[in-house]
Image 1: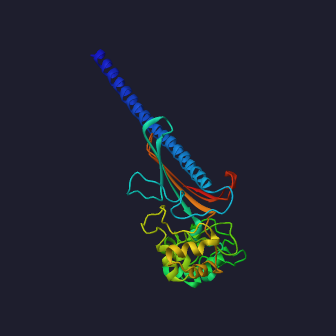
Image 2: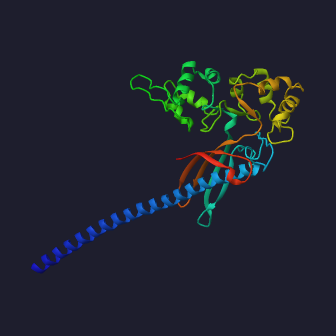
Image 3: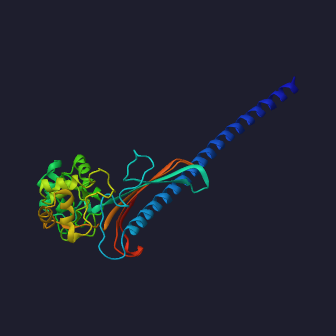
Length: 333
């Protein structure tokens, strides 16, 4: 009987030891599983970051190749940097999709970068906009003259804080990102979203905004004082008779000296006077070539884990070698 009790006790102890070891093994397995998943995600994230950064430099190279070594260039919405050939007819031609295998040589592993290059000189630069032009841009979207003045005060180097609860403190420096508008008193979320495609925040600017007549948004040209009939004719005929950007019949100016003649020939029945009047408005410096672009890259990696990374950079392009391109701002998220 004593021997049976002793063996029973040993069996119970053995079972407890096995149970404890099983719990420890399960805990270790779970911990290792979490570590493996975290490692896979970290690897995928680093791959996505590298892919997104590579996308920016790929866009910079494309912009550099589009810039001639000397002489006047011209940019339009059907240019090589703006419209990309797509295998899928339904795909957005403004998005350049670069698909490749993951950096670890696995053709089944997916990695993709979607690159968009936007001409910042088709928009109104808030760092150079005058109060009348800014007000004219805001009013159709629910803004006010008071809000226009608040934006100018925000960038003014010696503006005073705005009293209130809590008080608002101006930046007193040029804007470097459009999102800074959210800090301006009176700026609503709806108005900010309406301004996204129409306004830019280029740190380096002149006394008045620089605007590309080949690419400028309709609302921007109207805000600068353009005649609505002339503006509608120019914007409406940009894609030519076939309605497809990037073809030979696109309505564009190839040199500023002949811009009035070029644009009037394809949009206004050959009368250059209305276009010449638009190009001579004192509210902007008009051009047919652009120097500042926004590059947006969304990188996606699916293996060894799912990860995404986004970069938005503002690029200034000069003529000449690659060294002429510089980065004005860079944001990652």
